[in-house]
Amino acid sequence: MTDRIKLLPEHVANQIAAGEVVQRPASVVKELLENAVDAGASRVQLIVKDGGKALVQVVDDGCGMSPADALLSFRRHATSKISEASDLFRLHTKGFRGEALASIAAIAQVEMQTREDGAELATRIRIAGDTVQSREEAVAPVGTSISVKNLFFNIPARRNFLKSDKVEYRHVLEEFQRVALAHPGVAFSMVHNDSEVHQLPEANLRQRIVHLFGSRMNTRLVPVREETQLAEIDGFICKPEFAKKSRGEQYFFVNDRFIRSAYLHHAILTAFEGLLKPDTYPGYFLYLQVPAGAIDINIHPTKTEVKFEDEQSLYAILRSAVKHSLGQFSISPVLDFER
Ligand code: ADP
Ligand code: MG
Image 1 (cartoon, rainbow, N blue to C red):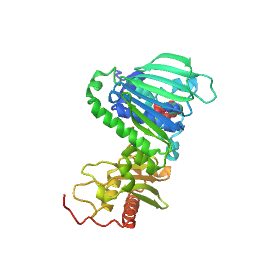
Image 2 (cartoon, helix red, strand yellow):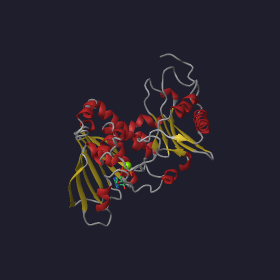
Image 3 (tube, rainbow, N blue to C red):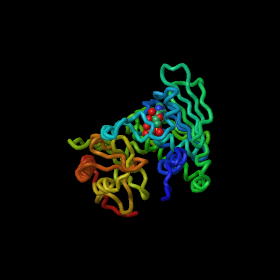
Image 4 (tube, protein in one colour):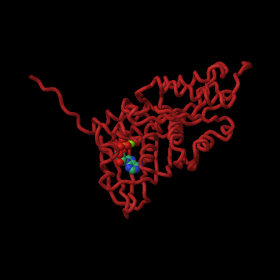
């Protein structure tokens, strides 16, 4: 008999699992921004260097962590957001897997500074490639700051897979926009290589879209609103005459989470049928709210895909809501197909 199986040590398991959660700097941006939102922050700052390859830092004014939690937060499956599997179906936070910080710390140089409301001092922890390098008290405001340097410093093969700074920056910006659109009530700012990219005050959705994409959006947005027993739909579509040659501003959120769904995207597109010039793509910012029990978000580590309980009905509701808005604002078909 030969026993060949061994349990992988935690640091090896973390490095392997990190591959699922962290593909590129933008993945770090998403995880840290969502943690800040989950912490109840009202202001969140994102600071990025070299497309996020050199630095991704997120500073929030949320609830902060106790010294013990600060250390525990880097362990795999350490989470304050759920305590049993059934909690997944009454979830109101972005996170729940307790994996992000463990994964990030396995493949980057991380420094966290965090202070709870009421605590006199903050905790500062440095950790790199899973090894805690220092833990000390520090003076810092209430909230949390996490900086992630030199992504994949210890996995050269993965680091080589990263694209140019410019491409990585585009992904970072896209992720920032998604989180900022999902939470217009939170103020967000973004700085890249020491220059300010966005300074978004607390706002309503229309203002948030305008702040992100420019004042030209003001005249283009048509509100969408529909409430049924199954779901609530809210948000805006862009008037069809402003549809673009490239897939541009198409944002779909489910329970305040950016979601990819080819099926529901199709529902939106068919509502525009007959109103678009050939090969143009309409913009939309649509928000679907369904009861937490009606979706399963635990089908992929990055949570950008979900399973719906009743996808066909949602398709119909979404399509009719968009059609209704297009009709109500008496948008006539584009008869003139000149290009
Ligand atoms: P998850 O978000 O799935 O719980 P993470 O690895 O992202 O897992 O974070 C682990 C835990 O660390 C969280 O559950 C939370 O308690 C704490 N945490 C992480 N980031 C912050 C933050 N910015 N502010 C306060 N607590 C945080
Ligand atoms: Mg998280």
